[in-house]
Structure formats: structure tokens, C-alpha cells
Image (cartoon, rainbow, N blue to C red):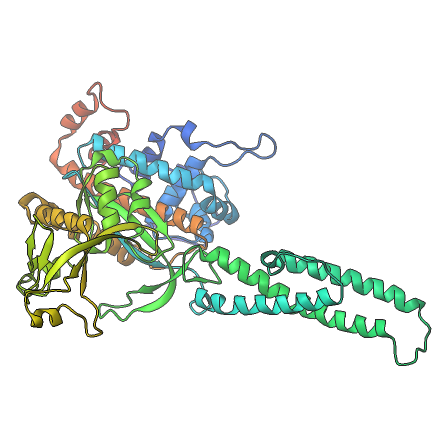
Length: 558
């Protein structure tokens, strides 16, 4: 016997109660967003016209859509018409995809996402879910929504822009000889503004010659010199208007967009070409993308940042400077890609934290071959009283001078330069003290860098330090695997740094909430209904302590 089923009936009874189970992810999203005070979420809006949709409602819709792996604005609108939990979150409001996309790309949602991470971190801290007092940091490359083969190289601009300026100077000198323009500074005349002014004056001179030619007789013996001059100026004006000026503007815009980078994508100017790991065999390709930095604890993302430079070393300090709730942590844990003198110095001196970050040569220096290498300065004999080194060949290196060097990013490093003495104990040592070209051998010693290297070695070799550092592999790295494999986000869906940062922020917060929902689901099995109800009635608990509320709802629903 079957239940009655007939699609040809003239009417169908509809259940208009948009209610969902108490243990649904949409309820956790709703409860979390509601913990953020509305006076923080709400921004100034126009007092006239149609009222705007509330930001809390829109961010709830995004979080739920991303939890269902729906990232398209049109698909989100489609969900709002077909999906009951989405209808419950939006209160059955009719929203267009333009509203969805505009909100996702706005600056207002960027502030809202940053605030949500602050409240989520507070939620974890209030419930004792911050572990080890360690903040784990790592980065990954996300491919941009841009053309893979359309990019501008800084090397090409540096090569062709000076040649264009030389041509502009030659053209300018020709116009000076013909008394068309007046003297200008070289830097100004080679710019697009200066070139536009020269072009304008050239057109004015052509207009003046047109008037003069109209007053001339129709037949002039030997031809009209004014017509010859006009023909020449028109040729120069055409070259400036159709060649020099557009190229000058293009090169100036490119120099502005480089912003310290060597190339950028023409489709998404904020995207930089980076090497992407295409497969486990490390067959990398150069593609436009963004460098996503994330800070985690307990596999929860507590903060994130988007950077256009591909190297992790330069992203650490600005990322930590923008990090909220940094006082909750004592240790900064990252891989060797973040180890540098500038990073160690800032973490210890400026942030007052303990770095558990190996440097690039850390693993190699632990090997016996490196430790016993006689050519390394750390294996040489050092005389502290007279400040000199003696190498494995018995060549004496005396202190000569201090040296200050700056890397390409402007960081200052101080070195002590030791030079082999010209007069050694034997004639043979005199020869060994020289380079193949006959100069005295020199060696540079960075006191600060070696201090931090020994400092980090001691931290990582200690029992506590090695244990905390070992957590990095299964704390921050699985988060990236979950993002790319489970949620399927290997490429952005928006263009521009701000929209991409908003999109990834919503995605990471969605991952946090879905993980929290899974933990809560398992935790309900350990409490009885009566125990949860008693906990819920406890006085003086934090207002943001929604986990207890949610545990009760999960238990009742179960």
C-alpha cells in the first residue's frame, strides 16, 4: 500500500511555516551574528528612498550560502527562493543578485567581517578553547579570477619608458626650434601632463597657421612656407596624440600599479603572478593570484589577510600589526619561510612575543656535515680579548671595520668585517690569506642575526618549544586543505583586493562556524537534558556565551 501521490490534482496544501530544526547550522549562524551589537554592524545609510537591507541579514545569508558551497550571487538569490533555511534567515525577503554582489564587494562588509573575527576569538577565549597560548601562522596562494596570460612586466616598462622619454625630448627640442613651445623642465615635459600641454600648444599653433594661410594668395612662388610648417606640426601632433601620449599614460599607470611588484595582471590589477603548486610533484606554474595569510588556533581561523607579494617573509609584520587579540598568545609559530632577522627583531622587541620560527638554514645546520664543516666561521677559533678569528688553515683574521648594509626592502643590517692579516706567521700563510685575484680575504659576521639564530635554536630544541612547534602541522595546514578540497575554493570569484579579501573572510568564518557546529554536535552526547538546563540557568555567565545556549538546543532537538 502506498501513500496517495497525484501531481495532476488541482490544488496542493502548502506549509508556510519557515521553521528549521534547533540543531541546524543556520541557527548557529543566526545566534553568532546576533551576538555582535547592532550599533557596530549598522552603518550610516540614506534617510530617503527605499530602506536598505540590514547588514546582519545579508551576512547571515552569505555565511549560510558559503556553508553550502554556493558562491555565485545569482545562485544565492536562487537559494533564497527555494531553500527554507535561507528563507528563514532572510525572513523571505526578495533580494536581487546586484544587491548581493554589491554588498559582498563593499568596504562596509570588510569592517563587518573583521569585527566578526574579533567576536569569534572572544567566543573561543570565553569558553576555554584557545590552546597552548600559541598563534599558528601560514600562507597559501589563491589563484585570481584573471586572465592567465595577460600581464605587465616591470622589466619591460623600465626598458621602454626611458626610450619613449628620449623621443619626447627630441620632439620637444624640434618644437623649441620652431618657437611653438617655451622652455619646460625635463621631468615635467616627459610626463603625460607635460606632453598633453605640448600637444595643446601645438594644436594652437596649427590653428594660428590655418588663419595665416587663409590670408595668403592662392599662388605663391616656391610654395607657402606656412603650409610646410603646418604639415610638419600636424605630423608631430599626430605622433604625440596617437603614440607618445597614450604610451606615456600607460607606463605611468603601470608604475603606479606595480607598487613594489615586478608584474601585475591586466585583468585584475591587484593580482600578482605567483608560482602555484599544481600537483604533489611540485610542477608549478606562474599564474595571477593572491597570498592568503591566516592565523589559527585549534584549527579555528582567528585572523586573515590578503597580500599581493608572493613571499611570506614580508607579510608577517604587517599581518601581526593588524592582528586583533594578540595579547591572548605568547608564542608566534610559523614555518621557515617567515624566519628573518627583521621578523625576529620585531616579534621580540616590538610585539613582546616568543618566536617559534626556524630560519632557512635551520634544518641543514642540524646535520653533522654542516656542524663539522671547517670552512664555516662558527667552527673557527675566536680570540675574544683581541677580537680575531683563526680559520682551519691557521690564517688569522683581525677585525677591520663595521659595515651597515640595507636589503632591497630597506632593512638595516650591521656587520663586523674581519680581514686576513697581510703578515702571517709563514710565507705559505701569507699566500693563503689572499684571494685568487690577490686581495686579502674578508669575512662578514652579523652579530644580531647570529644571536637570533642561537635564540631560536634553543627555543625549538627545548621540550616545550618542540612540542608546540609540532602542532603547527595539524593546526594551520589542515585549514588550507579543508578550504581547497572540501569547500573547493582554489580560485577567487571576485576581482580586486578588497572584494577578494571580503569573499575569503566570509569563507573562513563559514569554516569556523561549520567546525564549531561539528564540535557542538559531538558534545551534546556528554550532557543530559537536565545538566544542560542547569548550566543555561547559571548566573553571571558572559553574554557572548552562546555555546551553552546552543548545546541546550542541540540536546532538545536530538
